Structure formats: C-alpha cells, structure tokens
Length: 304
Image (cartoon, rainbow, N blue to C red; front, side, top):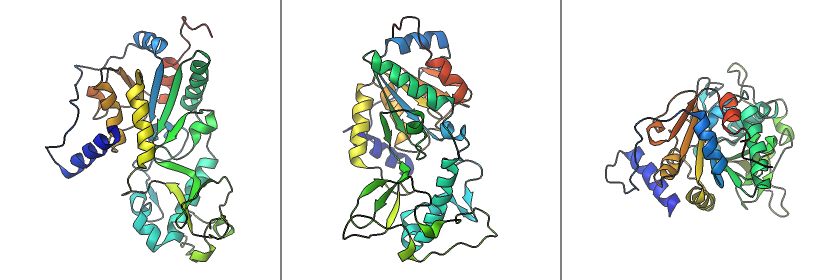
C-alpha cells in the first residue's frame, strides 16, 4: 500500500537506514519555471492534488510550528504538543491550543486559500476535480470555501474524546469556561494549572471523558484510514501542486516525489527551494499568495 511505503520511507530516513525499499525516484535536471507552459498543463489536468504546508498559513499570519517564534511561554512547541505532555499536564496542552485557536480565529484565508477554493469550484463545473491534502490544522482552507480537504494532521477546531473516541467539530471559544482568558504566551504570566475535571469534557451521554484537540501530536502516527484516502488521491491525480511546504516533515515530504515517480508533473510553490525540489517538474519561487493566483488563472480554453 502507498501509505505503508511512505511510512517505511519516513522511518528509514529518521533512522538512517540505507536498505529501505521504495519506488525509484527520478531527479529532474532542473525545475522549470515557465508559467505559460504550466497553465497549459493545468488546462488539461482532470484531477489535481494540492499538498499544502505551513507556508500557506504563515501568509495569513498563523505562526509555523517549526519556524522562528515556535515557543509558548518557555516551552518549544515540539515539547508541548506531545502525547506525553498531555498525559502529564493536560492543562498546559489545552492552554497552548486555546492560544492557537485564538490566533486562528483572528486570521483570514489569504489569496492562495481563496484561489484554490475558486479553482476547485470551477473545475467541478467542468467535470474535473481537485483535492487539498493539507498539513495545516487551522481550517483556513475550509473557511476559504474548499470542499474536498484532507486534514492529515487534524484540525484545531475539532476535539476527540480520550475515552470513547468521539470526534466533534467545536467552534465554541473558549472550549470550556475554565480556559476563558487563559493561554497567554507571556512567560511572566504563570500557567493556569486547571484541574483536570474542569478541562473540556465529552458531551456524549454516559461518557464525560477528557477531550483533547483532534490533532496529530509530535511523535504520533498519522491515521491509517486517512492515509488510505490520501493514497487513492495521489495514485489517481494527473497533476500535483506542492504549496508552501518545507518538505522535511514525513511522510508528507514524500507525497510529491512519489507522484513524480509515476511520471506525473509536480509543481512546487515556495519562497525557496527545498530538499525535494530536484524531483519536481516545476518550481515557482515567491509568496504563495502571489504565485498561486497566476498558476491557477482561468485558461483561454475553459468554457465554463
């Protein structure tokens, strides 16, 4: 299965293994930046897979987990958003995600989000299709109007019960009364240390289990059922866009190269080259909010 190959590749890369089995990946001599040529490719594509990363959200003002400023109070994001920290100190994790929800709720989709949503609608009217496979947890693609979105790292606007497993969309802010006014990133403001029985609770009858943000914490694996859906999309697309991602987080870092290994054109949109640029047909450098509107503009051959 495609997702098993991706997970194996990811583990091999992390462990430094040289014997990992994978489909051969062909490097391109140099990525093309001819926008006119790319527009022709887009006009002929039947199913476009778009892989988006933190760079897209950053242009809306959402701080990245791995960029500068990736700290809440005195803690690095990677040290807070873990299953171990949630088990030891769920109050700290909920305060942090309450702060993340604050940030998301004050930001709006940018030009890249909006153009992707508009293009999906346009393609649907023409009998074509587009899927957004995003690593972002901010839900800005859905706010922009995109319908076919796979959130491989979850959504900060969803909760999951640690007891019964129920997943629910939750736009209530704060999620519970005890989080009101909490979550300040200022290291001089003490943590709230909210008692566990006052943290968000499951509303399913006869449960009342502790809720957690429905996101993939650092150290957790991606949902296998979701990866199966991703596999299907990547195996059937005839054009792939890799947008605003550093291509260093696995297994998503291998999505684009694996599509390219089928001979399918892959276009990268980023403010700089990445470790995977050499595998792609096209590379368009600059802010996604500037390059994506040009790349997905209506082609003269489109009648709808």
